[in-house]
Length: 251
Image (cartoon, rainbow, N blue to C red; front, side, top):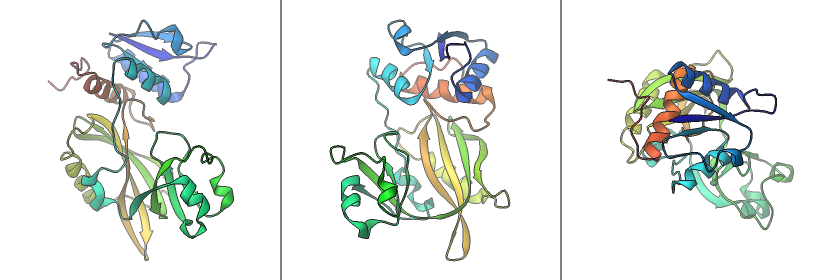
């Protein structure tokens, strides 16, 4: 197995996420090879390897082996913990119907634009064009006070890290436990992924809610220990490529 990691022209790792992943794999004794652009390694990569890069590049490698990822942002099993309504629409419909504004939207297709609140015409800039009528997931706007990323590795929550908001707020551990338990009931769930949480205020009351789930094949680190980060990436790659996870040291 080879771990291919993207670097800049000066040899530095291309991002902090890539640097943390490389450190974790190195600590576990993996063979690491650096590259600049995907074309350098595309033909060399085998189904036993791992490529640490950005989302589009990783998806390109996975498609080489016939793998398309299907990790829902909002699994049905986690709906009871969402604390808000969600629905689907198309960005052109939202663009032409001001009565629909005052909502949060994010694209169904990965990363075609950043999810954000739509309150007026200016907020629609960068959300595609009339020729790119993206399907979007909509939700009511929340008064979010703090957000955390939880890291799931083989059905266990191995860490939870704050990434935005006021440190005076803290999540309800009982809600987090409930989300983790419900996660374990999702058919075909990823063996490496994140579950994001938040404390939101609604009608004057604080509540801990489930924000979204993110696939682990190319996931932000947010301070997770490098070894755990590398294990999470390996677990998801191994699941997607239907191979043994050589970095699964659970015994």
